[in-house]
Length: 484
Image (cartoon, rainbow, N blue to C red):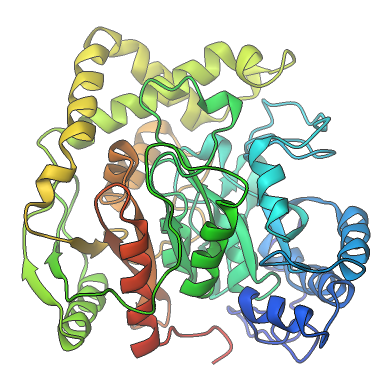
């Protein structure tokens, strides 16, 4: 990987970079590409080769790929070209985030503390992901263990935002988001333990959907969490791609304690009561640019016939303190049990300053940890009741505009890093504790042209309702594109 001082490829200016052009991928989303494959208008081989070329064009600047598997992707594309192409995304190129077990690839979770040994076989999630027809080209970058909201790693390794290469691509799914936003891939795997799908989607202009808890299988290392918070999904450029992926995934994995997504209609079957939350009690005030996009989105929803009512955030007192404490507990478990969780050769001496700081903080607070866990568990159990007569909440994804690269640098002093990330990421962790669905939609832009996402959330299991509302919104107000 190189930084943004490298020679910029075609279709870029001094700050914006993308790979959209009139090749086999063109300007289509994943659903349209799959339709073209089934209609014989393009082959999986052509799509994969175009994606490899596009990655080669933009990744030297973006720094989004940490492992490439081009030969296997080419082999899979040849097999797909000779098959019946019956799967929903047959022949469409994609990628995995560095957070799931993939045959032949290392899973390092963004950290040099985890050895780079290739996995011997696909994990449950990777197998079902491939069964949708998607062809992964490699592994995308994330910050160490996904603790923070910018994809920056030790040693100055940075994943940049294609809308402005001086800005962060968010985290922790920043590598996947950068490649999809830049047009190198139409869709890519992402996961979310505190906003890690929704935050990078918001700052790169994508659809980022966090499903309800139980919709996808966990990786082994996260199965023992006291409160499960990680959800697997994708980042995409259209709501229909995300909806198609979620329903396709269900063909290979039965959801646990939540209803199937099933067919997603173009709009909800009734008009909804939507709660508008402008500021989070878990952080500082929302900035003017973000607030302007949120209010415009609310007005557009009202124009579609929904009832939008200002309301308080469904966040209990002390939630921020409780979540940060739990964050620290997970980091402490990582640092002390890494050999059991990840690999016998796990090297705690190579942990980044933020992980080390979180773990030390947890040690200092260990006596109060049972109380924090009790309150978080109470939040999880009571979350749905906080909706009252509200169907969906809308609020900012993050509290202020997209920061520059380095704002959440991996080598920052711990207290500085914690203060910055806690004051930017003030809305998204609640749904991870609750296990409820949420989506970031790129409904507007800041005055400097950067995308701004708005966060939609619902009760656990109501993924389809959110997708239908998102589909209706997108049809009425198409999202901005990086090439425009």
